[in-house]
Amino acid sequence: MKVLIVDDSAVMRKIVMKALMEAGHTDLVEAADGKEALSKSGDVDVVFTDWNMPVMDGLTFVKEFRKGSNVPVVMITTEGGQKEVLEAMKSGVTDYIVKPFTPSILVSKLESLIKK
Image 1 (cartoon, rainbow, N blue to C red):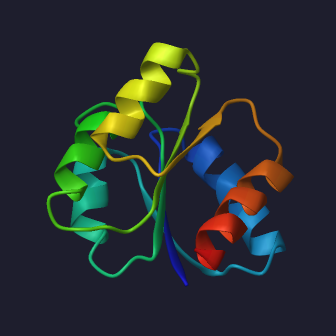
Image 2 (image 1 turned 60 degrees about the vertical axis):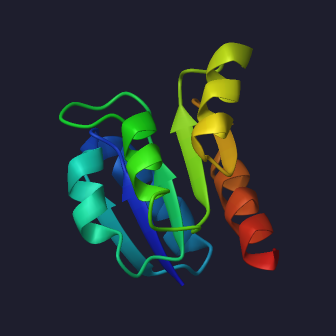
């Protein structure tokens, strides 16, 4: 299973990657913004994306990504208000994680998407 991790923070990408690798998921791809993510999203099985990023934010990325893919997308963000969650879901996000999060939450979200 190939997982794309999209976040402008290299530290956050490493945190997500470490949690996934410790759970046995090793086919991981990184992108620093939505534009880069679109260029790397061709054969991924799941996407974890931040909302607030330069160049192309996560919400815009999801809208563009949804034009050609039904791959599950999990938004990982500090934007945890009900309005933001609803906006993200309407834009095509499959699931939502609010920062800060634990590695177990991240892995359980991925595992639930694998079983669908």
